[in-house]
Length: 99
Image 1 (tube, one colour):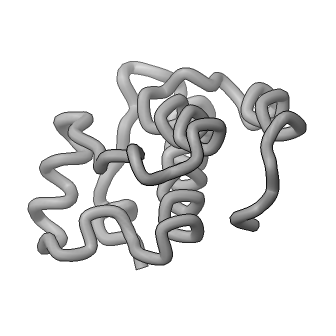
Image 2 (spheres, helix red, strand yellow):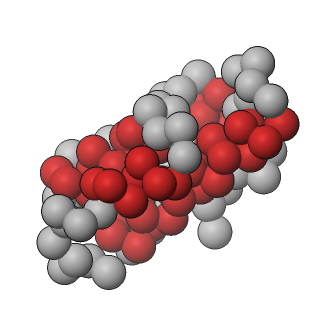
Image 3 (cartoon, one colour):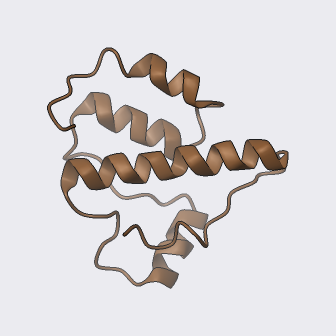
């Protein structure tokens, strides 16, 4: 389970539908992280600390993740995709060793 995702809502002044896309992409990044490293982001921290770090955009290191996947995770966490379609443009070039 990825702690803090339900409590963490990033809207940044966007419309409700865009905030949902942002949240969904954020969750996809956390899911990729957990699948690849076989542990949730910040697994040793309590829920409140995880929520605080996410709110500060203080995300876990992705240095142990294959660079192509790390780029996608970081782009999702830093709100660099405006839709899932843009994320899928990065997928074909990925080696699917982890999935």
